[in-house]
Image 1 (cartoon, rainbow, N blue to C red):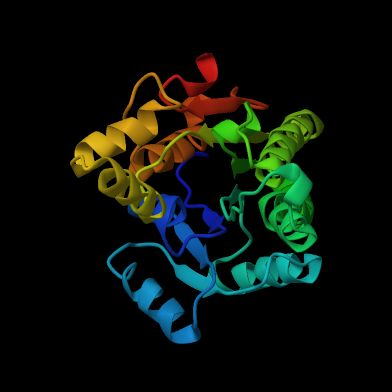
Image 2 (image 1 turned 180 degrees about the vertical axis):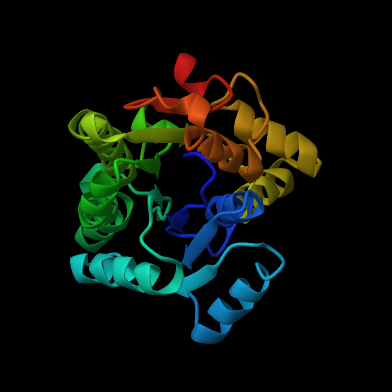
Length: 261
């Protein structure tokens, strides 16, 4: 990271899964973290208490980033809780699957709003201060679906491809100001979200859980092993470090070879 300084880090969608792993990773490294997600004030306080053992400050916001005003509110909440963020990690995302010709309009708009537009609005809100400070990091947690497509994921693929494109533009526009922008593109990640799919395969085919996991992941990935959330977190931390200062505009797959096919 920038010489001997702690940074204020905003991570959207950080109440669980990849986002929470990223938050713990940055907090362990001594940085101030802003947690965000759908949670009650009580749940938010409990989340913050889990960070009490770290040296840095921690805050929480439940701002609705599906709306532009919610993104403005999240930026304001972050400045109040931990200071002006010089690291923005756009991690929040939702999914819905259906064939394009049957895709519900509300789901299309909702997925694009959270998976793509929120990243734009937050970047626009925070970039002026990053530029003034001549240092900043924007890390967009995209997906392998920002690089390749799968059936029944029209909105998700459109949003994640868009996020990769946005990342490249932000990298070009801010290369003069010590700011890098990169996208991390995970394939299968070991989170609670994939467990029901694994259990369903195990039931239907009467095989054990590990065989079902390998079958689910191996259907797309030559390396049939899901990535741990901590691996995504450590890569995000690396991208904020001094050795990554010339990595910008990249879409980095962490996908077991999925996108290499």
